[in-house]
Image (cartoon, rainbow, N blue to C red; front, side):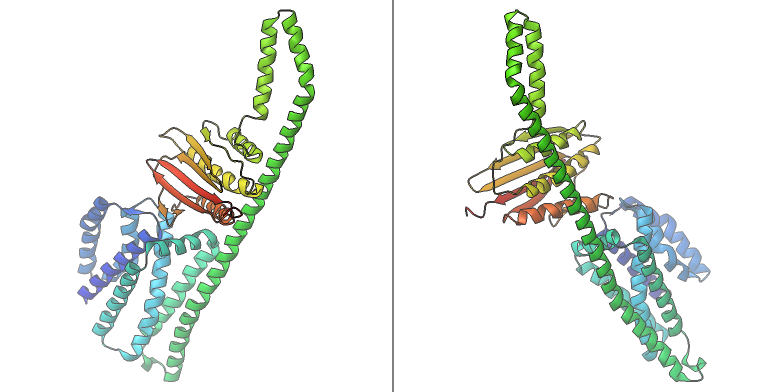
Length: 425
């Protein structure tokens, strides 16, 4: 029996490790893995085997191994994900154990069936792609309330433990064996119902919270657009005032020159140029974009923003200008503010052709950004906002039969956007 237990323990630990790696961006430290098995696991295994209490190992091996050996993930996140995974595995195995107890009585056969179940789970985890597991777990962690996450795990454990306990109760202990079968099938049906209802409920909550977040971002963008229009009105007012006062300014300048007061004339011209630069510091060919970039530059202290190219395309709606450039620049500025090792640089490159506009916004980053399926893969707290920002950009780009591609090379993150004037194609 010792060999069966050891095999099942190894398979379950490997399964838990694969799940954690595929569900997150953590990595295994090979040196720590070796140290764990040589100096932690092996001595404990020998001691517990000597006292014939090896079953204790199954309670903490996955936790201690992953807490000790993984990098790039918080301890609390590791503990929850391991607990969550084990609760699902326990729910599956307990229901199978309860069914097998009806037909199988020999302990050795039960052990073999347990190993087969563990191996099937391991094989399933190997077959399922990392992208699929990552996206599902990511949505679960980001959009399910913490209280519900805990409730799901606790309820899975409670039902599973009752099911396992029932499987070890002998039918002879019941005066009426129909009660035994009733309880047995009741727990099986409870598990099946649980496995059907909970995913539907979780999916509903996830969708609700996701679209709530989308709505919040849409409202925020509307506020930003209103803010940019207010800025436009302010600058338009300043420009009209400048034109109105232009004649008077020329008169003052002539008076200084007539008196030979060159210094005063130069100072006056300098003040005038400062005022002109304040009105039109950014010149992209699109007045709304000028205001937007100017506003972003004011909040990007210590970040060098370079602009190349012009955009006069009238087919792009103002709200889409705000959505595309606003979200892309917000993400770029946020990334640059976290830089410690490199220069903080954001480059905006715009190329306009007969019926297309190519936009490339790039920014330096401290560490390479992992990209999976054209989306940023990260466990950082701002991931949701970055992800929904890209989602908003994609929704705007779709209106113009365009495309969005992101990449990260040599510590430079870039978002490349193509917009097409469908009326000309």
